[in-house]
Length: 567
Ligand code: ATP
Ligand code: MG
Image (cartoon, rainbow, N blue to C red; front, side, top):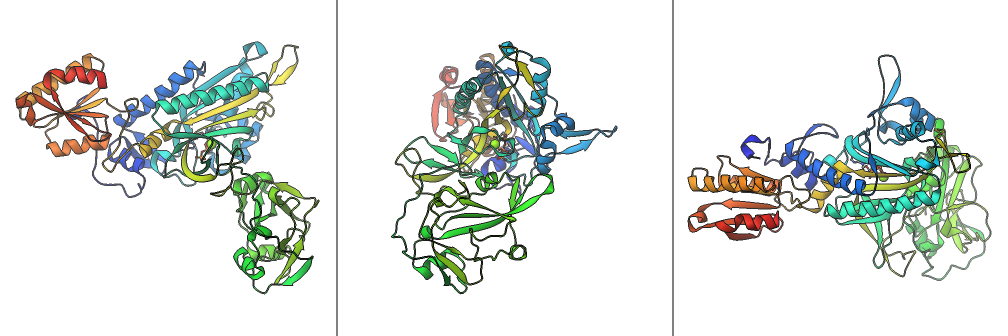
């Protein structure tokens, strides 16, 4: 293509709301155009890149025997009511009515639709397993759409769903999809990590996320510094902490602790390691049908509550903060909360690491008093893993130490089991003629988010750096001086020959200054640029590598030979 014929509205100015590299460069490079919060148009360059990424995803999935389908974007609410998600999904689900007053939703994910598709078409175990996917629009009315394509409201997702007659077969496919996703992410030139994940609103067990490693990532992941173990902070586990200090010997007693409320103050007051203090966090847990309850989460003073784990431990949809007044109304004294002395209507969840703990200190549920000498040996309560892995904690699998890093969640695979096939009554007949619910797996990739992820990892202070596999064009041919007939002729000839050889070149034939064209090349980021300039009179042109901006002189006769090798 010729730049003069292509819509590439590059700009110098950084848009106001763009703070991360991918958002800035995709807008400035004329790849995308903002339409509204979390809504984007893809311009010709953006569409080309999107199609290339999509093609890689499709190629690997097709090789893994997945079949592409395309399901409706507008989905009947009845499916969502049957699965129970119509009420549960929350405000991200965009609901609307048609002229006949029927309820619909814009698909944020397609489990319900896919289960219904299979329910109507697959009757016997003989047709299993089957893995169907689509690469289509999704809509989620995100509370905070931001970072451009990273968190849009309308976005492109590859969503795949597999159906099996046994758990073992589903697990086999899950492993195959992990492998397939690894191939996709590798082909895209991404540095990534596959981590253990929380199952979120979709539920189910056994789930892994594909994280693109980038400082701008919204997810915190914990990784071991010596083995392969990695997890989203929402799901990360560690070896239980061991005491670093002597236990404070004390018999059970109430202690006057005027105005001492925080772990730091308590630790100083009693001169004990926070390991021996019980930290409590009170929250209101929002449940189904508008119900809620107050929950006190108790853990060692050395630990931090992990909200997603905490939320899962009480089967809540969300945890929200609760005021001191609300607590007082039910008889709980903030700052002096005791996990063992609580009113009936308040639920308490103890962290697993408190099990059988002794020599502990905690609140007394009385203003200005704490209890010492608490022994939880044999104490029966609701125990769960509710704490976050911290940097320096011990890896659960080896002797390594855990550290934090930031990641962009670009893929997510789940072992779903019968979570959807049961409520949606989707069954098949097994070898013995018995009716069974399909066992499912589900596999997602944020295709449009990948564009942002690629640029987050591959850019410099001048613009995008696309790889050969993802670039909008293989090379930009820059005519340095459009008035120089020799330059124009060679550029035209080279452009044509490259095209004839199947190399997708972009010819910058604009009547602009050389510096302006170079800046656009650096911003758009094709892997190479061929500059046809002054040196042509000596028989040379210049080849620039976008990645390191290294320049090399090429003899005119060698241009095609070299480019056929590089492109
Ligand atoms: P997140 O935690 O980032 O909100 P999610 O866990 O809700 O994502 P999934 O339901 O797992 O997302 O969806 C599958 C994939 O779709 C994600 O791994 C991600 O790559 C992509 N995705 C999800 N939400 C968005 C969004 N708002 N914009 C772009 N891509 C998205
Ligand atoms: Mg996810």
